[in-house]
Length: 410
Image (cartoon, rainbow, N blue to C red; front, side, top):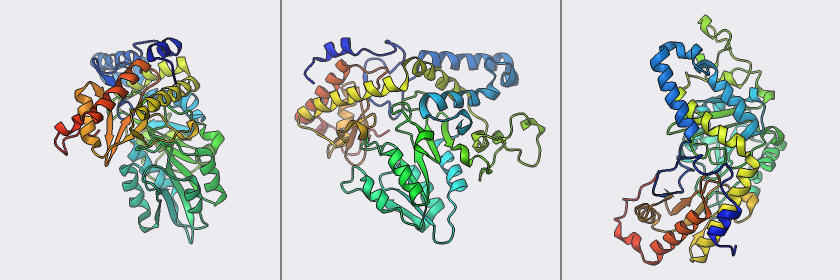
């Protein structure tokens, strides 16, 4: 890419205009794949929730605008069509990623006879691994990485024998940013007689998803990364229509049929849709922040988000590699998520030096600095500055000023 960053900013401006997300002032914020910044709309809705709470008390569940009681269902319908390629009844905005994963593993991982194995990727986020081991124990099969960075699709398919009950993979690997072949691997699991579940934490809001078209059985994700729903905000889950007839393994009162929830029946009166997999009452402030962010996404559309994300990561990769640094994220657009992973043996200390130079990256041990431009608030000029700063930190060995172990990891 030979164009200058300023010219690229004129040719390829922020698609929703400036100020639609609010990263911290005075820095180049490239950590939105860990915690995304808020939107003005989201902050305004959070303030409205606080005002309604003070004004209405418990009446906010029915008398606020919108009523808190049905807000999660409203958001599930928005995410379903806008981000997931799913039907509204297949999606719930609820819980946290690991809670939702436990719920869906308990429901859909049903080892029987010879078919007992649960196949996952060895590079999965640790919390996923904790949940997988809790359910599968010695029947968990982790597909190894050949280089510690990416997972080869053929290694996954080779693990799918007639003893496999379930495949659970990460849509985008959290360290390297590799985007897996979701459709192809789901099809391979089904051909082997197994179900296919996915963790889309690093995919939702940056990669267009088509869960129905791809035949995905179930999925989980968080909403606080690219979608800016706020720290610890609600996650989400998807259950394909064909699986909605059965009960959740972990029932809770918020999974009740909404028309009968306050009958307070001793027996669980489950919702007919994916809402049945909800467990507890949703935190409304996180819902409000997510609702505001989805307004911005609705204006732009996921295809435009993805297209600009690919242009930004391509530009950033070229600048970083031109400085002689090693990028381990796959080059091909079809194999790349939303961030660039730079390998350096002192990654934590490099990350600290970058933060002190007003560039906010993310660090993942043992040796990855992640840089995540967001197509709705990151400019090419910012990326050029960030790449130049990273190059100077490494070339001038500024990272050596920081004691080992003091790097901030988020």
